[in-house]
Image 1: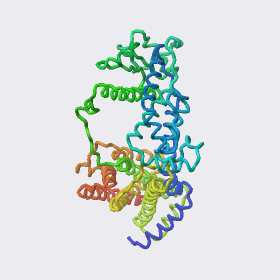
Image 2 (image 1 turned 90 degrees about the vertical axis):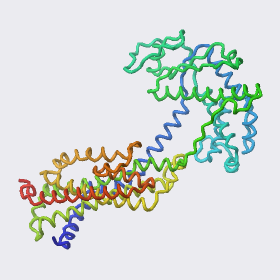
Image 3 (image 1 turned 120 degrees about the vertical axis):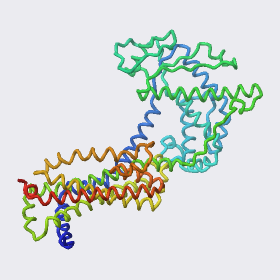
Image 4 (image 1 turned 180 degrees about the horizontal axis):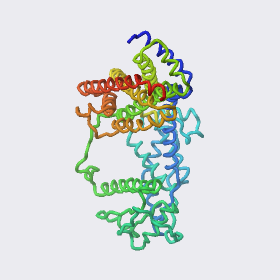
Length: 507
């Protein structure tokens, strides 16, 4: 086989490929643009949805005595913690309103302080403040004690629960004939005064999002230091806003309960440690950025493998079935080159297209996380540092993967007599690739040596471990050996197909 002839054929095929719009889209434009757009879109959408969810006013069904009791408990917590909240606010130059004031204004004030503590960037609640005040407040907020920051988080939770909850009396609910869907069961231990099925239908109708029940003698129970007050909530975890209503009540109960516990301990002259005879202290070595890196270590291999596949997809179809449709295959066969050289030239083009697509996709993804493209609230957790050695070894793995895709797609597409027929032949290959490529996203799947012999599964798992900084050299060696042997076998099979004139000439 003459290498110079192979490169001449490859040069000719490159020109043909670059004239095809579909190939350029899948090889260059899609990998280069889809990654930042996809992650930016997902991040912004998730951020907006979370913000909308937290700002939604949720409707909660209650007995007539519940709302006054919850309001009293919230006011009591705010009154007890207002001195600390005022002092903390004053430290960053803001005036905290007195307890019992306007709830909406109090909630806005709390959010302003929290936004300053978080950095103040892109915070809508700070828009009406003097920029100089915000800048100095953000600087001073960095010196605030973590306990005071946690207190403002609790104050925000209390304020949200008070201002974003609409209480509806159970007796005012309209009867509903909605059929309860399969899987919905009404618990047997609901309060006797409740019609469980009626409340369940109301939650399914989204007339309400949850129902809350408190004992009528809440304050008597709170005075009895041996009693625990049950905060009962009836909700549907499969409904997002219903789950949010339950989470808000659980957070409210936890914060108020902690405050009451501190009071009980103080009244009895006991230290806070009295209520915590055993304290679990976990020392996690993984920083938030490390956890994000572990997540991306599972996602990136899948993305790289799939973009390599799609980078090879259209060039392979265009250089085989496409040439048959254009009747240029016969012209190419008249050239003084062997069938092996012809196959090798087309293989080089498809192989390069697969590598280029994967590299562009990975590069654009890296720029997305490092160049401030993501929203600041999302980008804060992406201090990602992949080791250069890991990146290089991951790039090396692209070679057998792209070569295997090029050989398989060329061989299969060549069997087709038209571009459309080739698409139908090669489409099932996507599912064969997707399942093992997704293996890296399974957190409990360990990189055991026998898995290194399974195509694509081995590459996906090895990329995951490399991007996390784990260098499994024996696994790497077996993976390269198995993928190399399979690639050579596939290339040999594709070359046999190129020797068959009945296939080449659509007969």
